[in-house]
Image 1: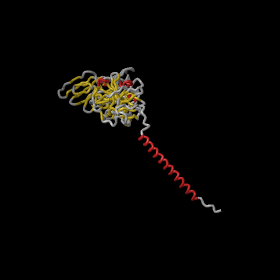
Image 2: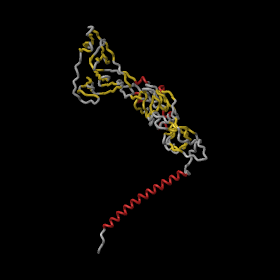
Image 3: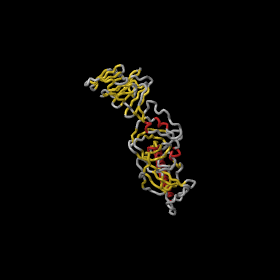
Length: 416
């Protein structure tokens, strides 16, 4: 099973530099995980496991490992959650997120002295002290603190650009990590256009916890892949191997192709062969593919229509192959034979003449003009079409005759 991760925005602008056009370089798993840090943290708000931070002109909302960033023209001064709604204020007024609708909301006053879970907390000019009501002990916290708040049953405070959770006389830094997929938007194509056209039938096992990014293989004429969303595998999965390029592998699952670290894949054996219906056939589609994956990038023959091929195997693998495929052997104009793949529905059974060996690849120049069955079938179709046309003409002229007869009946006789 593959679990999607939402696109996350980096508080620090993401990866500082992208790879230049050249070899394919896919990021390591650790490169996707970022620690959330701030430069000018002014306020915060908490709603369960969701955190919101005001950092200059930016509001960042963190939840379930994902980070959403909102930019404003003015500095954000206040944040607060109330009944699941996030409010923020600037010099222009108070608004809600994510819709930025203007709102009437009264932010609470700053708290300098409060009682919580048997302790009395005193915040005075940045110095925070906890007084234990049972032991009568005073414990000062190290550092400078501000913005003492209670959300739910928890007490929080800011210490510079860090959010702390206060429990008794201890302050624990809240460390938040998120996935930043910015680097996947600049993955070099490398030598993948040539590698995708090399004949291959391999399957790989992808490690659990692996990041992989959707890539569009229909257009590979630029420097970088056209990348989609990035996923993280929850458990081991099996995929069709397409090619290696740089430090990466390109794989396919169903109709979708992905790029990932080559080190996260391992070749595996699968049972994908089923009984084939015929030994020889004619290609009725335009292409033969280097791998059982239908995309322009994997096309090895682009003018295959009418080509006579020998069918070696039929492949089916639900959930991995997008459809059934035939593994075929074909002959090119230079009289060399090659192996390729044709999707189910793009072959028609070839009728072999009695004096031909069915195990020999038929001549690509073979003509079926003398095929009696085909000729008879065509004649029957032509006769049926002529009958249908004649019937339509009869109906049309019949209606016209009836109309003329009625008009003649209405003309009065000339009695002069």
